[in-house]
Image (cartoon, rainbow, N blue to C red; front, top):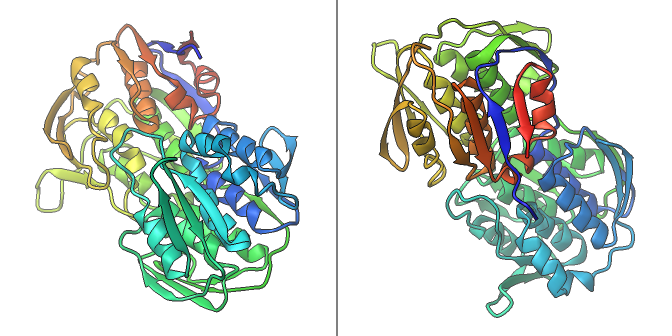
Length: 436
């Protein structure tokens, strides 16, 4: 596979209308959940991106009947799974290359009483543990067998039984997996310190449409009364809030008036406010966000005059996936801001690239950096960079759009993993990006 790059000619202002794609994280969860029934489940607004397409292909390999109704609309029917395939080396190899595959554990365990999982790969943003998932499965009565030689975990159970549990951390995929395992378990499961991101809320709504009995949706205390079986349903994936946030950042920094369509404002939580704290002006029109041209955006200070701090936190706090975008936007603000990235290690490593481009950033430690804004007095310089993870990738793309000269971003498979046709959609707004 040849490594593709983006060549970006900076300094072209963006204007026009852009529509966010479906949410990647939600799509991965609800697609995995189709394994819980033998009836057809139809899901629309699925983003056409690498991470999602690989999961769909894996389901197809497992024997799920996948029908592509249109580019973003699929029907899944898991009425004839090849359970032998799930023990094969090929399946394990595919799982280890695909982050989203961990979401298959819960539904397979819930419906068939066994699952195999490879040690996960994916982003370079610190180790993402699976402990929360396994503790949840154990609480429900599953056994975990570690096979060091094949580097896989087997999870099996005679019968899952509902129970009360308090999660050690509010892991999004962990919560999703435990919910999917619990919907068919016997009795009542209560999950405290559950993640409550919109992705999880949407998963719960879809499962309830399929006949599950889940309450406490949108809170961190979820109650699941087990049912005997689930049936088919239809579901539509929400717009991707990370993409909406990325577009707000882009429009603030290099826009001359950009409308972001159909954003499902209620589901964006605190995201618009995080940009407002950097001084970005937003207009809400119906369910659209309009970002007018911003000759200056002035960083807020706290009421007592101290320096503005932005930090990530579990939902409904600020999602860690937008930290890198906020850092780039802050480089051109008037004022200074401290960004504290609490939830992952090594998400800030990409600021080195911004410093090379002329940004004034003090990296305090692996979790904190202070950005001293240029107030558009100094443009970033074009650079040559590589994308370490999918969210830093889009942040570097925004930096390059605002930079003087031509930049090259390598390893853009990391961007393709999460963003559908990103260059075509941005070029339609006036950007100059080509793939090579």
